[in-house]
Length: 143
Image: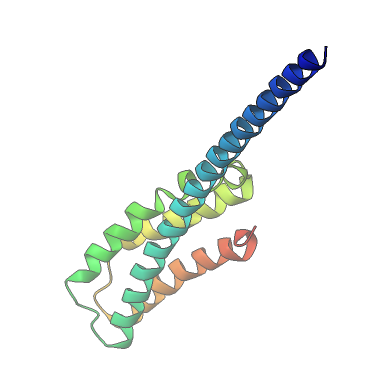
C-alpha cells in the first residue's frame, strides 16, 4: 500500500510539473506575441519621428528645395497608413484614436500631394504634421 501511495504521489508530481511547464510556455508565448505588437508600433513611431526630424533639419538648414523632401513626404504618408494597424488593439478600437490617426493621415496626404518648395510653407506643413503626432501622443502615449 505504501508503494501505491508513493507511485500515485510521483504521478501527481510529474503531472503537476508538466502542467507548470506547459503553463509557463503558454505564458511566454503570449507575452512574446504582445511584445512583438508593441515593438512594431514603437518602431513605426520611431521611423515617423526620424523622417519628421529630418524635415525639421532641412528647414532649419535652409534646404527647402532638397530633392529628398518629396521622398520624405511619401514615406510619412505611407507610414501613417499603418498607424491604426500597428498599435495595440485597445487603441485601434478607440474612436478618439481612430479620429486622431485619420487626422495624421490627412496631414501627411496633403503634404505629399503638395510639397512646398519654400521654407515658410514647408515649416507650416511640418508643424501641422508634428501637431497631429503630438495630439495623439498627448492622449495615448504611455498607456
